[in-house]
Image (cartoon, rainbow, N blue to C red; front, top):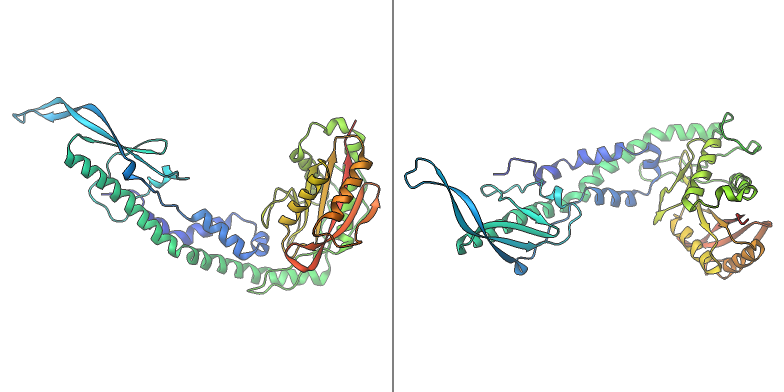
Length: 396
């Protein structure tokens, strides 16, 4: 009889487990994340995979075991040698095998035998008799088969169970934040920029960064966005700060993309506390930098090292893969350790206008190392997205 937790008890606890996952997230993230995308994520976190096994590929290994037995008079124990076999049954790879065997099936049959494992091989030791071998195979079929039945049964109802909890939490958040969003919009309050930032290498003129948010309802998520002036202000800040890399290129040249990104994120957070995250989940993957206002992720930035025109086109593709329909701006930052920045920018310009999404005659030169262009939005052919291109010379 199985005395531990079972898969049935696990699936009964799904509402509680879902609430625990939701409790780990920031309220604003839950309010603005795509409902179906996050439902997919929750399902993948809580779903179990069945464990497949291949009895037709089973092999047997002979060995002699010393087994305690009562003596023939029943007065004590003696140790006898018994011919045995190790049944070696191949298993399919499983991401949670150790935990899989910690949970038992609802239906039981005596006690589960002691299974051993060597990689993807299940090992069961039995006496070398036809009956014992047959019973061993039946034990494996029973204990794995009934676990799998409970998993399949639980998975059939899993998405609906999770959705009920997620939907309720989303509605509660929308109702709770709706009044606050209305008030902030009415008062036209700017995003807080910390005047006492410990690290402030450049002076930035005061700007108002305001979220433009529709009143949330039970079924419609908020629509965060920035005005173009606000985006320009943020890009100005990034551009001015990154120019410090050009002043002391040796100090930064050993850093990889992630390290340079972290430096930038730290500075942005010092000036706009709590607004910037590194490697933030967005649409199809993770972005290098996502600028987050109270109401959601509204500006996606990608950091790359210069690798030629072909690589620049691929970087645009990667940036576009992160955009949702509500993203209307993006920033592509390229660091170049190679000499010849003029040529690099010329090749990048060619890659921009030759990109399949480029909107004709929209490439604009803001400064010698800063461009902007418009592209057909990857999620909507009737909408465009503006990309700001920054180039940082780190050659020396």
